Structure formats: structure tokens, C-alpha cells
Length: 198
Image 1 (tube, rainbow, N blue to C red):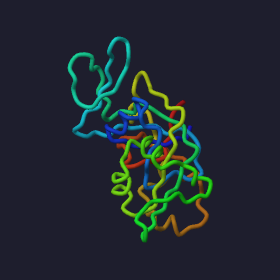
Image 2: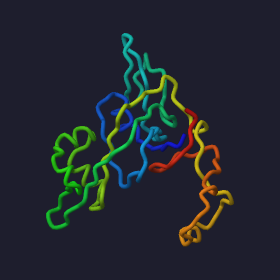
Image 3: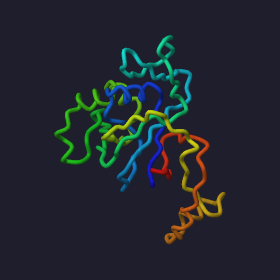
Image 4: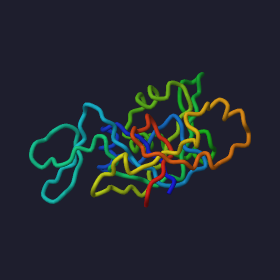
């Protein structure tokens, strides 16, 4: 099954796993894709841990002693369904972001920031005046046992390494060249298409 593997820093992953974050801000969004996006927690100094307390499961940053039983950095602990996003443009004269599609103008900016777990300043600093995309995280599923990178395969070329500039010059490319899949060993910096067994 074709899917997307997307990297999240530990803080954003924690907010998703705890149910506080239902939107994700990105500098580019998948085009013409509807399907599962798997969340990879980056290997940063900040540890993301899963813990239980009185039968409840929660997620925290750092070490909190008793009850902590799972470091999630470097794993894929959740996935969500993706089928829509809101595109934001930047008004250089006014110095603010705005939704590009007419049907998105009814979206409340304060609710968007709350669902992103970001402040207005963080939104602007991340965007740096470029177009941004807000992805809707639907049907979030948390795995009992986090998945590993080795369970995913990446799409690659039949004769890789291949000069991508030559490939872009050719309008008609044999799509079978994309069908070769290699086991994933490195997480994407942002996101990439992958193959995963359902």
C-alpha cells in the first residue's frame, strides 16, 4: 500500500499522541494523494516517552521515573488519514498570512493556531514569507507497538543512482522505474512516499 512517512519533532508528536494537535503545518503538501500518513518521531536530544498511570496512557517529554516504559524517538508510533489541506499565502505589504481558497476564508485563525499548537509568531517564523500548508490530521491511530523504519520501503529508480535532471527533461517516463522498492534505513527530513504492508 502506498503511504507517506512524515517526520515530527518530539514535541509535536507528543501533542498529536495526547490529542492536543489535530493540524500540521508544512512548507509543502502531498498533491493528489489521499491515504495514510505515518508519523516518525525524530531522534533529538529531547526524549518522548510513553507512560501509564492508573491504567491511563500518556506521552511526556523527558524522563519521569516510574511508569515510563517506552522511548519513542526513532520510531513510528502513529498514523493519520490525509485527504485535505488549507493553503496559506503571504501578503508582503500587510505582513500577514491568508487562506488562498475562497472556501477556506471561514476558517477561524485562532482555532487553527490552537489545533497546530503554535503561536502566531511561531507560524510566521516557520513560514518566512513563503506559502504554507495546514494538513488536517483525521482518524489518528496510535499503535500498541510502534513501527520501525525497516517495516517500510521507499520508492526508487530501477537504475539508481540516476541523474534526476535527465529524468525531469523527459516528459514520458516509464512508470515501472518507480516500482522498485528498497527497505527504508533513514527517515525523511520532511516526508516521502513509502510502501507499507497493511
